[in-house]
Image 1 (cartoon, rainbow over the protein chains, first blue to last red):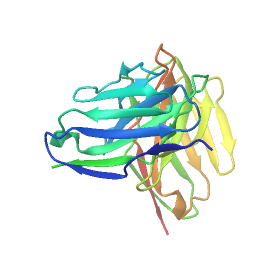
Image 2 (cartoon, rainbow over the protein chains, first blue to last red; image 1 turned 60 degrees about the horizontal axis):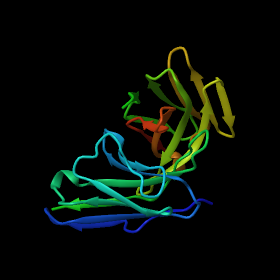
Image 3 (cartoon, one colour; image 1 turned 120 degrees about the vertical axis):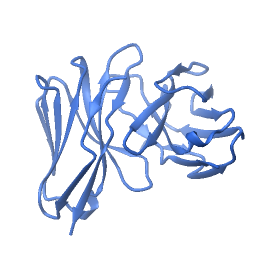
Image 4 (cartoon, rainbow over the protein chains, first blue to last red; image 1 turned 30 degrees about the horizontal axis):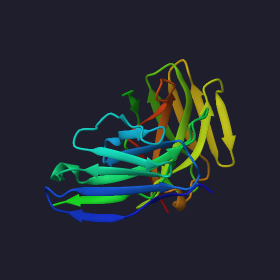
Length: 113
Length: 112
């Protein structure tokens, strides 16, 4: 089975802190994604990566950056956390193939106080 | 991004059928998906349908696709309390990025 592991289930941070959310997948997938999930808004794509050291902006990249130094790991960085970044963050990975089925981690619920 | 719409809530009685609807806007969608999210968990793929199909059945799940109306539905037969979850539809638009566009999710509540 594909496994996508997010390092933390819950995080509480203070405004202005630098926050790292880590995601690791074990199926040699080329593509990795970061979404945030908010009630009534569904999933919105923040950033994605289709190869090591490659990154592309999604629909809502402002206030975020990402890092992909190894194929299996994709990190989401909040340079200076703000209260409007309180949300559920979901990581996903997929093969670069027809169908592009994305496999999701369990999510990290981040609260910024 | 693309516009994928779902109603936010649905309640059904245990044993009844549930029908969750979704509309999308991009006629070039190649695959359409249904994901399930249980409380406190990530998204789990339930089923998907290729755009040249109009129906797919998998045990209690039936997916119907009306490509002309850009309408996708998920029917769950004999709904159980364990089916209570949020259901997301998503479309794959094969641009250079090959990204999925998700709906808002429908929260299904099954009443015992």
